[in-house]
Structures are given as C-alpha cells and as structure tokens.
Amino acid sequence: MTTIRTLPLAGLIAVALAGPAVAQQWPNLSPDDEISPRQVQTVPAVKPKARNSHAADPGDGPATTATVTPASRTTAGPKGAPVGNTVGCSGLFAKDSSHVKLAQVVGPNSIEFGEVSGGGGGAINASILYGKDPKRRLEVVWQNEAARSDTSIIVITGQSQWHGPKGVRLGLALPALEKLNGKPFKLSGFDQPDGSSAIDWQGGALASLPGGCQIGVKFAADPKATPDAVTAAAGKEFLSSDAAIRAIKPTVAEIIIGY
Image (cartoon, rainbow, N blue to C red; front, top):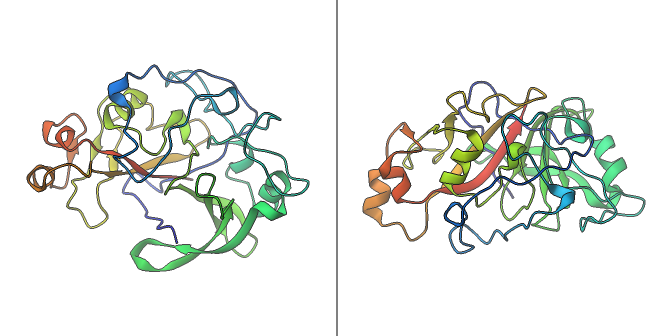
C-alpha cells in the first residue's frame, strides 16, 4: 500500500486534476536538472508530449489540465475515455469532483475504492485509479467519504508518471524544482520523523496555484550519498540552495496536492 503523508505546508497539502486541456511547453531544464533512473526508485523518464504538456513559466496562467485525447497511451476500461497525466486544480479533479465523475471518464474497470496506507501506519479509504499499473496509479482521498465526493488530497507516489501543477513530477532534481518555483524554498532536514519535505515555497510560483489547491513534496536523498553527507543535511529547516542539501542530490519522491 502507498503511504500518504500530510506535509507541513500552510494548511492542507492538496490536489486537483485539471479541466480543459491547454497545450503548453515544458520548462527549459538543463541536463543537470534531470535525475538518473538509478537515483530514485525506478521512475521512468517521461518525454514531453502534447497530451501531457504543462506550464513552462509560473506566470503563464492556469495550471495545465487533465487532457483527453485519442493519442493518449493511458487506456481506460470499457466505455472509458483515455485521460492525460497532469494534475491541476480544476476540472476532473477539482474540489467538487467525485468517484462517480472519475469513473465516468476512466471507465469502471480502471477505478476502485479501497484502503491505502495513511500517515502513522494507519489505513484510509481512497479512490484508486489504475491500481494495477504502477505507472498510472493515482490515489484520491475524499472529504466526504460516505458520498465519495469533494476532493481532499491526491497522491502521486511510487512509479507513477502523473505530474503535479507547474510540471512537478517524481524524480525531479532539486535545482529543477527550484526553477519551477522561480526561487529557492525551505525544506525540512533528512532526519525528521516524516523525512524531508517542502515546508515553505517562499512566495514562489508553487506557493499560490490557480484553483485554490496547494502542493506538497517529499524528497529522497541520492542512494549514493555518504552517511556523513546525509548527517550534514539533518535539521529542522534548510534552504534548497544550501550546500549541505545540494550535496546529497535530493529528488522528488512523493507529491501531495489538496484543498
């Protein structure tokens, strides 16, 4: 089961899948910003395609939406439409979405409602999209669990190829995340009980998203980082530009978006 952790941002750390598709270009990231497949789990690289493109500039208007295109490789169950792989703050996974709305798009065979791991080792109920496909899996927790409606949080983790607002994705290197935010941000040290996570976007592009959702990110250190380097990155708070943090080459290991 996938662990859902609440991150210490201002309010809940939230998600929403976007509405009308808007084709935009990927951020202009250098090769040094990208993460090697060996550095974090086995997250495959996602090549930019029109079906899942996202905003390159934090000021370029609304976040990219969940795309519905015949060319998408994301297939659904019978009568289900293919969907893109970008999570935004409106449309299909807006605050007023529901399990029924998701099922109408992805098809009843591509969604289930069941237990996923919650913070502290407990279990919570969520709608799970493409639960048998790690690359397409997405977990949605509802504020109204009985009605399975009103989006609370959406979790992107494991090997999932879904992207968050502004192009945040699993495996993204710290310098690249800084570029998407437009400036350095604060994160917790790698010795904290919940691990390292973004705690303050410092007024950057990821601090305020169209649609009212918030984004939280958890980090994993490079497996090749020495114990001494990881120890140097211990503490309650760091800037992402701190040399001790950069030395262990953190990458995005989990994305939580919510309202």
